[in-house]
Image (cartoon, rainbow, N blue to C red):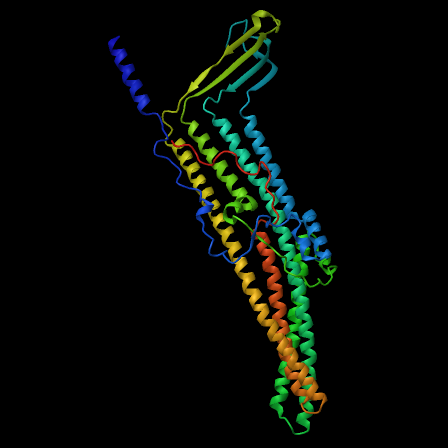
Length: 486
């Protein structure tokens, strides 16, 4: 007995010392505090407003009813939205499955089997007889989830579901801004076409006049070839502008979820003014609640932290309960008689002792997934704040450029007007007026480009500020996304 006791004690010590543990495994990621991302100097010259966040229908501020209709159509028919909605339903199903895994299960079944046993193997009876076996059973099983692992897995699935739901809202914001930006490019392409056609008329007039001057012996063939080159360049610009119009219309057709003919019905956009955007106060801290991608990224961090909790519980003892009740009878015996009754209770305790490192590898992977989610969140946060700063800088620069270009265009217009007066007074030549006209057209082209960039950048700023995303009460994770230490 003493030998047996010693062997048992040694065996127990070896088993306990060999249990797998999670010691030494910890996630490394740390969420960036938005207040540490300083932007005071960058935003020092920018007027702020507590109500500066874009409205949900921000595009109405651009003042174009056709654009409003196009965005509403895209938000209804764009196939990317159907994809986003399908992903939401998929995530909801996965969360429901994780929740169902927490509940006990109960199964019932019944059946009958008939068999003829050969007398060559067994004496009669039962050999050389045909008999029936009838049975019915009910099976109940329940994992008690003492350590909350299944609950944590369900909470992780809920976190992923919320992230997917926010992604669907982010997709709508992205589509609305993409439609607006494509619409701006369509308007600019039409302006390019106007300038290109005016330049073609001007260059042809200059070409005709140059040919006449050569015939009169005033100019030579060099001037004719220069004029021919200007005509060809103007024709090329017309083709470039036509291509830009087609491209913008096709891009809009794609965003609307329609065929290319839909774009042909889009009329020339009116001149758009950049949307007036006030910058919200306390921008770095509040931005995390007004950008859908940031909210979704935070939910993914939360889900990853719950996955770590679930993985840790796999190292602990597990208790489950099973109950099996059955009725079984053979031949002509009554299936429902008391002597046909069978039942058993199956409480069970399990503890991982040696698994070749599977549990540690799984937990290590969950830690890495958490670190990855944290890194993605931090990257998104840093990118979001810098997007706002970059768009503000762009708008400030474009405002200065437009003011300077307006002076240049005004001067070019005045020079052209004076050349026309000189020509009509017989002081200047028509060719001189055409040369000045070219400078005016170039100034108008640059102005159109700057204004299109200004409207486009204002739309990008709206998107950087969340694009009208309005956080709801349950949008932010309630529990801090910090996994418990091992």
